Length: 368
Image (cartoon, rainbow, N blue to C red):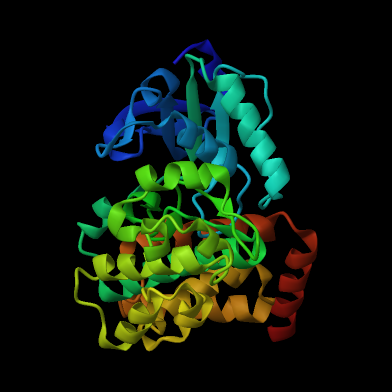
């Protein structure tokens, strides 16, 4: 991959996924080179191959390079617990360029950045490298037969991630389907594959990039009726920033449960897939459905919020943790990859904070 790849503080190890399976990106295992050997996943897009890799067999002239550049540009700007965490990026044709960061961007800056990337890389021969937290493709996780509670939590992760894009960043993902989702070792499902991400709103969007590439990038069954009809004006003046993702989510839920949608979700799925774009609901209220109200979900939410909770709540959570593990409410992967790191971080924080140590000693003296 060239000497410039060595600038990353991560190794790029064995390949575990072919470009054909990941929109032109090859998946590799990797690890940090800081002495800790922390596992990572590395997405590698070779630009000469991307320029020859069709987005879909039915569009043999639509090559994957420009959508890959769009994804590369966008994924670095997004930070949310349910979006795959980017640790480092590198364009080997421009190794000195700083990675962009920040939660979203304006349409003007986004389009200009994308245009600059496209212009500078059109005839390039290098690699695009994205280092993320460890993950596996969604289908690999689904084939491991996760429990009903794990499925419910994974679906909640997707909804929360999409809600963030819609409500906080005013962005539509635009390409929601199984190939755009990855799962971390702790069982969190994360959004990825932002090759179509676009702003949508009253008299705004979707972008020209979305219009040019959406037919070839998104599987046909996940394209909403207005997309199939190429009615892009209807999208901008229709149901809001969430509408095209809401439709795709309805299709995904059927796939998620292998056609056996829980009865309490059926009406919601029907509303998500209504042909009337103005009638498609926003996603956050969907989480009020009882299917998401599980002991595992409550634990996951507590783990997510633990850093902002008062000490009394933290003590209560850790105090009940043993009982939860004895009752097998916590899957082994969750215990290993989320609970244990939280405990380690808590111990390190306490041991390095003299005030907390003093408070603990005071409590001990008061009870002696």
